[in-house]
Image (spheres, rainbow, N blue to C red):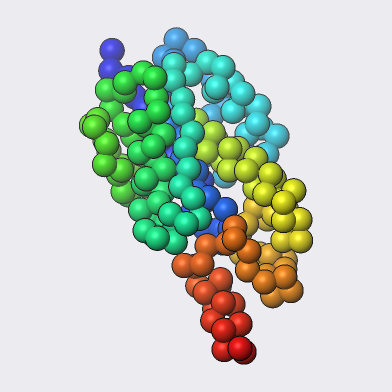
Length: 193
């Protein structure tokens, strides 16, 4: 039987924090009810499903690409890098890798991109959930270090509250300098000096 590995990322849009990816090979003998695109699930439901996935999948792995890597190679390439890292950490070799989206990481397995795969393929849904819960946990950890940005509420996304906090407190080391709103803030500060 050919094992399918689902892969998805979380955190391409935020202005702060790393991008995360997960790779999951579900156990065909163990059905996990309620798998869906992580974006349509509540935070508490994602955590419940993440625990089931970690407990019952044949294999799973989570990886990330740092803010420095995002700024150096761009968010798409950093997302693909995180995906490749996740797949390479699996302790079971997949027969095929199915990736959410339009782009595939370069890996040593047959790989196919599936647009909206996180809502169609259970293994990709599972990867979506693990990536999202891992990134959310990291943003809560970063909130403890940088409470003035309100990361616990917006998880680094460019909300009005986050942009106001950036105006008030400046850009931190957790922010993606290659992103336009951050770049504009930095350029504005440089113009005043």
